Structure formats: C-alpha cells, structure tokens
Amino acid sequence: MATFRFLHAADIHLDSPLHGLARYEGVPADDVRRATRAAFDNLIRFACDQAVDFVVIAGDLFDGDWKDMGTGLYFARAMGKLAAADIPVYLLAGNHDAASVLTRQLPWPPNVHQFGSRRAETHLIEALGVAIHGQSFANAVVTENLAATYPEAVPHHFNIGLLHTALVGHANHYPYAPCSIDDLLAKRYDYWALGHVHDHAVHSEQPHIVFPGNLQGRHIRETGPKGAVLVDVEDGAVTALNHVPLDVMRWSRVEVDCGGATSLDEVNAAIRTTLGRHHAELADGRPMIARVVLTGQTVLAGILHDSQASRRDEARALAAAISPELWIEKVQLEVTALDNRTSLTGAPEDFLALFAEAATAPDLAQLLKEEFDAFLIAAAKAGEPGDRDLARVVAQGDWPALLATAGAALGARLSGATD
Ligand SMILES: [Mn+2]
Image 1: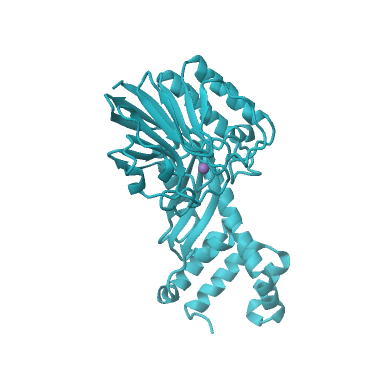
Image 2: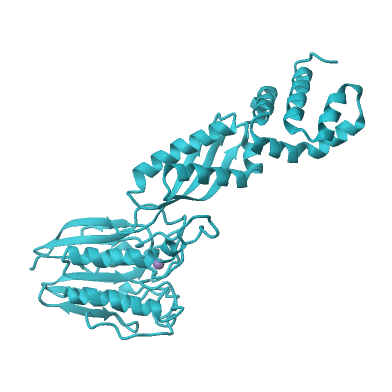
C-alpha cells in the first residue's frame, strides 16, 4: 500500500465570534472577529507547505447558518488554494452545519467532496489505496448511532471513518450520534477521524480513534493550543500522528494562589508573577486571552469580593506590562475567608494593616470610604467627647487623615490602652 500523509481537522466554526472581550479598551476587534478565518488560513498554508495528500474535516466547518454569502465565498476561495496545490478535501456536516441548518449554498470547487446525510457513503482515492467513509448530519440533533450503519471496510485499502460524534458522552457537548469505542473498533477501519468534542484526544492507537479538537479557541472553556492532526501513513500503517497548533489567539485559565496574602500589593505581585510565567510558557508567540482565577484562604477575601472591578482593571494593567498582546478576560474570585478561629486571632493586626495600607492606597481608601462612610458619619454625629478629632476630619472629608486617626483610635482600643 501507498505511503501518504493527511490532515485531520474538525470544528472549525468559521466566522464564530470570540466571547469575553466586548468593550475591552485596546483589543484589536478586527483580529478577534477574523480569528477563525485566520486559523483556517493557517491550516490551508500548512496543508500546502507539508504537501499533504488530502484533508478531512469531521463536521462543524461552519458555526451555523451564514449571516451572508461572505462566509461561503471565503471558504470557496480557501478551497481554491488547495485545488491549486492538488489537495482534495473530504468533509461532512455536524450539528452546527447540518443540512437543515444551512439555508444558503454555493457550488464548491471540484476538489471538495461532501458526504450526504441520507446514508453513510464511501469515497475512494484509488491512487493512494484510501477509502473514506462518512455521513453528514441531516439535522442539528442526531440521536441515532450513525457509526453502526457505516459500510464494511474496503479490502486492501487504508480505511478512514469520518464521523461527528460525542462517543458515549462528554460533559461539555451534546450526546449526538452516540457510539462506543467498541462500535468503532468493530468496523475494522484503520483510522477514525472524529469531530464534535473540542478537546484534542486520542482514544485508541490500534486503530487510531482521534479528535483533533477545534481549530481556534473561541471562549474561556476552549483553552490551550488548538489546531489539527497531521497523520503519516507508510504501507498501510500510521507511523506518526502530530497535533499541530494552528490557532491565532490562545485562551488560558491562570490560577493565582493568594493564600496568606495580607495586602492588595501582595495579591498584585502574585498575579504579576504567575501571569508572566504562564504567558512565557504557553502563549507561543500568539496573543493570549487569560482568565485570572484568585484562589486560596486570605484575610483579604471580603475586600477582594467587594472590589472585583478594580481587580480586573489592575490585572489588565499588569497584563499589559507583561505583553501588549496579553488580555484579561475576567478576574474570577475563588478565594475564601480564613476560618473563624484564625480570623478571630488574626483580625486586629490585619485590620490595622489594612488601615495603614489605605492611608497610602487611594483605591483601598475609596473602598473603605464607601464601606464606612455612613457608619462614621453616624458615629461623628453621636458626638462622643473623645471623637472630636474624628468628627472634624469626617466633616472635612479628609480621608487620609481620617484613616490615620481612626486607625490610631482603633489600635488603642484593641490594645486596651483606652477606657
Ligand atoms: Mn463543534
């Protein structure tokens, strides 16, 4: 049997929007909007550079019905480039681009072979001794086991099963065209080119049962390198299988341990360090969109929860200093307060530290002002003799002075130095 290489892609979701960057000062909106096309451009260029013998696309090439003909015309041009390089493409429709979902059509170049949705079909590439079996989704919701009715393997050929399926199920994906690994093994094909699940996964190596994952992450649940799988076949056996990153922007979830932090400066320092390391290790030269997740037990838990918008703005500023192409989608708070015993013994010191910090940190002072304004005004009006100074600075709205005074008074009370 012949020696050849092919590219296996799926879940390209052309022209799908990227979620989570709306109204973000400085984000290049055009690049974000074009990301799925730019990743597909990478795939076309890679296929030509590697001179692959053919490309298979296992469903969800499109994200849904085209808003206009632009999406289809873009795809037709991309296929024209593969045609010029003599590379045929075999594709089927998944739940997002099922026959019933797409109301518009265009004639594809003759190098594009699309599987029908009425029954499983087989396309042969005789020059390579390859048989490709597949069936498109007729509707968005396919609950029957499509693989069960796929044709028998063609003898003396390298048999590829192209299928859009959730297998026996996946937490993040609808259970469409369900089937088991055993169902697939029973067909005695040489390679199952699957689509639908957006994470790259190799479920079997004898024969190969592979999800390439989607081509371009589109939101924070699609993190890490995204791309396609390059498969080398020699004399009927797979000799190499490589996941090739082709994405143009990369999503990442960055956990920052704030355990033990006692000031917002320490939290910011932890964000800066962790984000910087993460970016250096995982961005791979691409723009990166990160979600910062603050974790750990800290006395600052309450403050962090109350100042989420400031945290996001500060994280965005810290990110910009690491790289102008590092964006913060969101700061998520998973910090917890210290348990009661710890906070009882820790409170006075931490509370004083907070006041001390607030005197020189405008953000924190503002936050405390919002929290305590009403209380302090009421306290000042109560007119206790010892609170004269407090009453004066409250009246003047002199917050740095107020914090220093309140902090000193509080310290004195907590240490029992006053009666
Ligand atoms: Mn999909």
